[in-house]
Image (tube, rainbow, N blue to C red; front, side):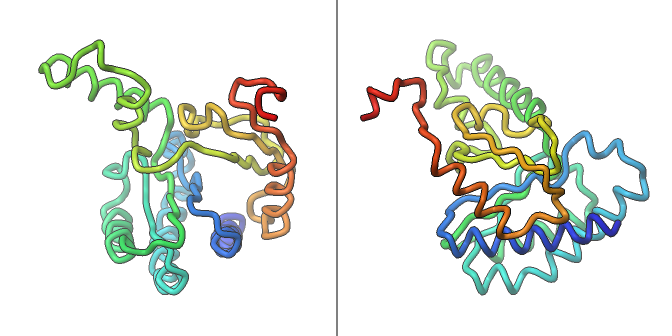
Amino acid sequence: VFGHENGTKSVKAVVEACAELGVEFLTLYAFSTENWNRPKLEVETLMKLLVSSLKKEMATLQKNNIKLNAIGCLKTLPKKVYNELVEVIEKTKNNTRMTLTLALSYGSREELLNTVKIISDKVKNNIISLESIDESVINKHLYTHDLPDVDLLIRSSGEQRISNFLLWQIAYAELYFTPTLWPDFREDHLYQAIIAYQQRERRFGKTSEQLN
């Protein structure tokens, strides 16, 4: 529980730092579909912490002109959490400085499966043709349809895996792995990740010569 509470401090620090740096889109993996398999008490504690954090940070989001967004199987969240989330999203919808997206009850495989089902149903009902399906059609039906692809993915806590997060959207993202635990992650760690990102050459399949 202590780690989760410190994790909220990390969220606050990273969100404020990103806003100051001019980052327009920030997505945080708050709770995965697999996290429901954790001990019941831990899940309940996380949900309570989420509600209290949303209430507590509402004023900060408004003050910093930050829009809150959420992706995932949101209807599977406890009613109290869902209602609080929807309220904050509604109250911040016109903010323009930065879009903060919380991935809640989110799993990328589930998202892709859901997308395939929706598109298949539209083909079946002659709403779209099979031949018209391309990347843009898939993008349009993802939870992240109104967000750009990921530029930088930061993985904390020394883990060397993606953990079912935005698998489609990170196709050309730069990956940054840090041994720093998330509860200890602060502005300086974020700056280190961004500096490393700035030093990389993003080629998107091209050669260095083609870019120069």
